[in-house]
Structures are given as C-alpha cells and as structure tokens.
Image (cartoon, rainbow, N blue to C red; front, top):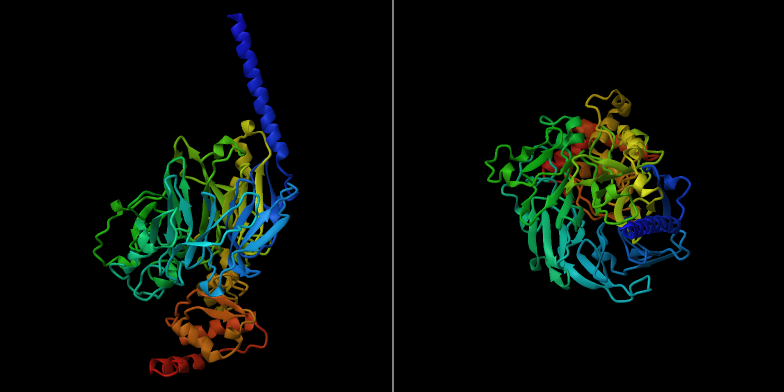
Length: 581
C-alpha cells in the first residue's frame, strides 16, 4: 500500500514537472514582443509584435499549420489581390513576402474573406469565391485558382465572408442591396418596400457544398435571412453552430429627423452578436435591436405596416454592441497558449466606423466575449486597443489603423490585420497560465472610458467646438462618416475630397452630385470607388451652398465658394428636365 502511494506521488511529480517544462518550452519558443507591443494596449502578461508593417489595404487573413500567413487585400498591389508571408528565422517578423492571385481588374477585388479549409485557401472578390491548393513547403500556391462560387456584382455590402462547418459545408454572407429596403435608398422619409424584395438573393447567409466548384447561388440553400450584412462570421466547433455579427443600419437622424436625435442616431441600432441556426431570421429591415432598451423595435419605415413577422419569430442577440462600431471579423479561440479563460471565447475585430456625427467615431478595438459553463457572457472585455493612434483627437481625426481580420496561429498566437496600411500584429501570452487573475484585466476595463469606446453622452459640451462654421456643421452631420474629418475618405469605399477634380472642378457637376446622388464606379485621383452616394436634395439651397463652400475651401487651395443662387438655378433646371447629362 505504501509503495503504491509512493509510486502515485512520483507520477504526480513527474506530471507537474513535465507540464512546467512544457509551459516553459512553449514560452521560450515564442519570439520576443516589440518593446511598445507594436503600439497596442493589452492585458497584463500579453505581448505583441508587428509581423509586417505595410503590405497594402489588408482585410481578412488566415494562418497555416506551418505559420505561413495569407492575407486578402481590398485593392490589388503588384497586380495581385493576395499576400503570402513567411517568417524564415523565427523572430516573428515576415521575411518572405509574396503577392499572388492575378485576376483581371474588371472582376474587382473587393473587401472579402480569407480562409483555410481542407488543404486549400479560399478567398473572395466582389463577384466570386476562389480556392487554390496549398503545397507542403511552398509559400505561394502553385495550382491555378478554381472558381468555387460565382455571383452577381453589385455595389452595396459586397463582402462575401466565408465559414466552414465540420460536415463539409461552406457558409457565405450575402449582404443587403440597400441600407433598410426603402423605396428610395437612404432618402429621408422614404417608406420601406413591403414585402422587401431582396430576400431571394440577399440579406442572408447561404449554405453550399464546400467540396464542389463552379457553383452559382442557385446551388446553395438560404440558411438564414433578415441579416443586413454579417461580415464577421465564424463556425463555432464547441457549440457546432454558426455565429455572426451584423452591421446595423445607418443615419437614423438624417433619414427620420423627427423620430431620432443625433445622439440616438449615433448609438443605434446595435451591432448584434448572434448565434444563427438554420432557418433563423434576424429581423432586417422590419426590426432593429435597441441595446439601450434591450429589445427589438419596429423600423420607422414599417411603423404603419401590418407586419406578418413578429418579434417572437426573431433570433435574440447575445450582446447588442454600440452602434456603428463595424464588426468585421469573429474568431473562436481554440488554442492552448492563452490562459484557460480564453478557451472557446469569441474575439471580435471592430473596424471602427462613422455614421455617429457629430459624436466621435467609435470602435477600433478587438473585444473578447468569454465562454463560461457552456454559455457566452452577456458582457465584453477590451482585449486590444491602441489602433487609433495620436491623430484621432476624440474623433475629429482619422484612426491610424483599423483592426480588420483575426486568425489563430498553430501555437495559439492571435493575429490581427489592419485595413489602412496593411500592418499585422501577432499577440502572445508570456505569463503563467495557472496564475492568470481578473486583476490582469483591470487596466483594459479602464479603457472603456475613452472616447472611441464609451457610449457618447447625450449632452456633450465638447461638441460645440466642432461647429465653428455652419458649412462644417452640415458636413459633420451628413458627410464626415464617409469622407472623414480630414476629407481624405477611408481609402477603400469612400473617395477623398482633398485635391479631387470632382470638388475643385466644375461647380455645376458638384452641385448635381448633391442634388441627384452618384452611382459608382467613379475615378478619383486615379483610383476607382464603387460605393453609392445618396442624393441630398432635401437640403436647402443655402445649406448646399454652405457645405460645398466648406468642402472646396477647407480641403483644397484656390477653390472658390458656391453661391446659393448657383444651387437654386441648377435645381430649377433639373426639375424642368434640363441639365440631365
């Protein structure tokens, strides 16, 4: 009996020592983080390093089992839409960077997915999903790309993000064609179309056979509907179900000024974290989720409609995040490097967005939602911050970086991509997993009080400085969310106003854009932009003159003012059917 106890004690000691050695070995095999963590703020004992600094407008990314990184670009660089990165000397830095994926520019590249599945990399453009076979030891795929899925090109919500389950299915997000299915899209007081005609091909998630090629949308089945744009999407292998974060609608004050204040428009609707089972309905466009009241509300376009769909028919969000944070990627952590509290929890990359003027833009963080006792927490943590940089200035300036994509490496490191310049961070845990405590999160909790994270106060005395000029006030209300405070756009969807011939050139053409809107694509400073600009003919002639004068004279040199009479004259001619060309 005594020998048995001694033997058991020896085995226990061996197990503890082995676990300790294994833990130390893993830590020692990780590269050192950058002295400043690449500019990021992280929980205690986490470190970060910059893998690459500026590979182009990076979107989603994936990391192979050997550590090679594959990144999708919004726009082609070196005539390619994808990037492959390899760390040769194991210092964590990208030593071998190769661009690949030569497809014609007319196909469009598009801000979409990058996933690894069954030995292939899958990536998307605005008109197709492709795959390429990876060869062991080779960084760049040698096989020709294959068309997995072909679909129609359209200009709104074009991101086709992908997810794969354990049974050979691929899930594809098909975003809505409009903001909220109005008769006139993004137009003040325009009623909603009923029933909304988009559901046949849009505003939902479709399921396909992941092992087939040359498919069209007809080869799939609609898995879920009523989802405006579920860019952040991942299959959860612990729950064996699909999860999505939906982008909520825009501009509630601009479109329904008598119903929503500027503050309510900045806050609402929620960005919803949803578990999506087959047949689920997210409620768009008939309902939105109000995270302040914690309930679904009928959309203003449909208040006078006898809706067949009821709130009880809809899936409830796990969390309703603050409006316009723009969740663009979701990853469930299955690695062993991080402390156990992170196991199966959800990391969410909030790209950060506008549509909150005159309040500060929000988001620009990576959040974490713990998975505890088989359920997701109803609250979230700030996991990585610091992307906004020094020019953000409480929302008056642009964010330096915008967290976009998430991926996990084979050693459990977390990778984050940036869409502005193409920076990629690798985040590692260097502490003792067994000694991790909630106190290591306290400094991150304090960051929730910062302007880009906290909910804006309804009455904010600091807003007064934004309106030194009446034209600037109009710009901050209607234009800043797309064209940014510095007039340089976002570099991807929305064009710059600075040094743009559209602004400094023919004034009549510029006024006409405000009165009639503009459909892409258009070329600005040699770059193509596809997003639609809604018409703003509801503005008075005086207000149009003021905002265009502000744009021309604030963002450009030697560009003159726009007179109210010039706007009035052109508006009258357009109403009479003249000046249509």
